[in-house]
Picture 1 (tube, rainbow, N blue to C red):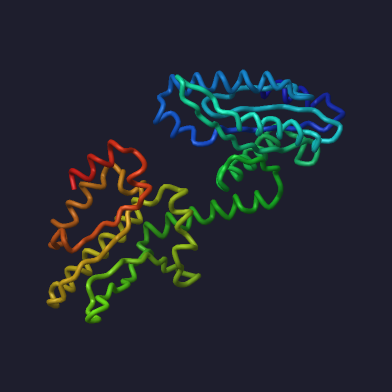
Picture 2: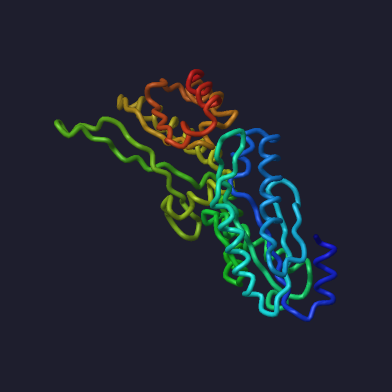
Length: 301
């Protein structure tokens, strides 16, 4: 694919369109169906693309796993939209695996010569950025590269750096929202709400950072940082004869983490609090994913 694309760029007098395509939810498919069955789906997917006989398609290549590359040449790059429509519509028909219908969705990133550059490495990089943008915004879509995507990528890298520094510097803090008994008005417990005490931007709400926490796989680190502070607060309240419980949320990534059980167990030992003082609210997604590990985790707890 790379060699042919480079040759076309050197000789073409038309606009050269580079397509990067991924099958959405590939890892979930592998986990649920097994690699051998997914390989059969990939073969069927490739056969269907070839059967489309897409106009002006110079090269279609399986780059490995869920990753594909397509190369087109048009007098006007935007003529490729019709071919991409055919590709997307193809995925609306189910793939049949052992008498079971399975729907594959794809995300597509597009860049083209000469608008997005004349060097192969630059064009591939921009198509890859457009692909990632499509996947991050839900997938099952086609995204053409533009400068705004590049700026967003830079912002995302900056935010990831700040989040990792915030974890290291313990900038995430719990705010305690009381749960009140309506009949008496008495406090019945608290829910811990995470806040980011940013060094320059002030106190930030979860909407400003929680999606990035999940994206960059920092959920468990954040959970641990919050839980330790909660345990310390519970011990302080206990010393003041104020016995309460605090609820903390755990999503799928946190609850399924290999160290989750040991961390929670050590929490009670190191901070001298009782298990009934810490309520772990498990999100629905945790129970829907990884059924076996979730069951083992619940039994262990």
